[in-house]
Image (cartoon, rainbow, N blue to C red; front, side, top):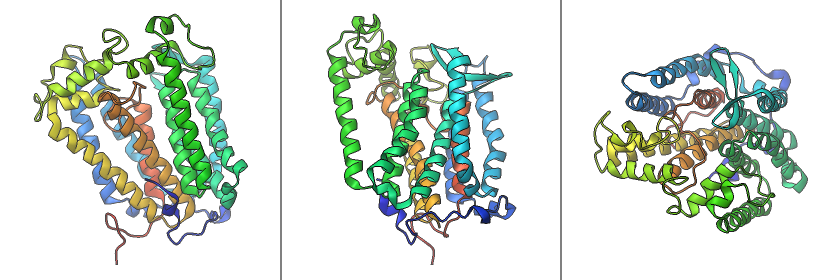
Amino acid sequence: MINSTLLNNRIPTQSIIDEENIRLFDIKKVRNIDPILSFIVLALVFIGLLNMFSASEERDLSYFYKHFTIFFFSIPIVIFLTMIDYKMLVVISPFLYIASITLLIVVLLYGLQVKGSERWIPIGPFRFQPSEINKILLVLTLTWYFGKVKSRIRHLWWYLTAYIITAIPALLILLQPNLGTSISLLPIVVLMTLSAGCRLWHWLATILAGIILIAFLYIEVHNLTPDQIKAGEHPPYLPLKPHQLIRIYSFFNPEADIQGSGWQTYQSKITIGSGGITGKGYRKGTQSRLNYLPEYHTDFIFAHFAEENGFVKSAGVIILYLLLLLRMLALAYKATDYEGKLLIVGVTTIFFFHVCVNIGITLGLLPVTGLPLPFLSYGRSFYLTCMIGIGLIFSIPKQKIFFFRSST
């Protein structure tokens, strides 16, 4: 688990950002690109491209072309971020945070509605989803905040302020409605506050409050029927849309409505199981091609991969994600300053949460929330968010390391 000891590796518990000594651009920093992290990312990108090509119809390769294009579009962005001083982004992050809040309000007022949610801002032929890039901006803002409050994070007010900073965009995203992305902001602040050195009992009290909230939600939803939820007869203090409550109900009662709200999870488990040990073969998956598996380009892309490639290769992909996360934590451990460590922890949390939740959904272990899988799922805004996160990690100065330990 990410914990506060990560930040105690010969680094003082105070901000060391000197705004006057920030060097905006240094082309020599390209040499600091971590080869191991780069290799893991490229491996996942390659698997994602092959899988997206397989998931695309032979007569319509638009998903594949868009997936391919956003990767190459993001490469210069990663290189640019590597060469700039990340501290500059941390310093201006409060302004970026305000801009992101403004965009989320614009989405609510004028956003493009797709499948009942107002999540996108149309920009010519493209659609931009502000809630996705908000994850990175939140990490930057919290990094700036913790650097300013320093050891005062151990006081309750300053600890709670971090959650207020997170709650504003989370509530705006929830109003779109976009439950999955809204929830995905919470692990960021939870793990970053712990890594910043908050009091352990404050942190444990927060975790306990979350468990109580989940138990309360279970009791309230469990006492309803699907017909009551669809009719909007749920208690008004549950700030969720009927379709969101139905997903939660189906998770706790998976056999109650297989032909309706439980269809996605039911078909996902069938798809994964049908792949067996070795899979059906590349582009030979039947569940997705016969349209039994819904959203197989996005939310259930891992189920599509498992059907065609089987258990062994699916386990290999999970191991790749594990290595990705471990390498990020190793880089955080060897970052040479406090803010750099925090920033990497925040980016790592984004990847960790998305991988765990997406794969958990496809296996029927979690309710459907619509969170994409990094580098595999279709979704240009989130793909760009992931690549920006990688670029930020590259930009942070670090001691030279091997995979898990420093060189001698």
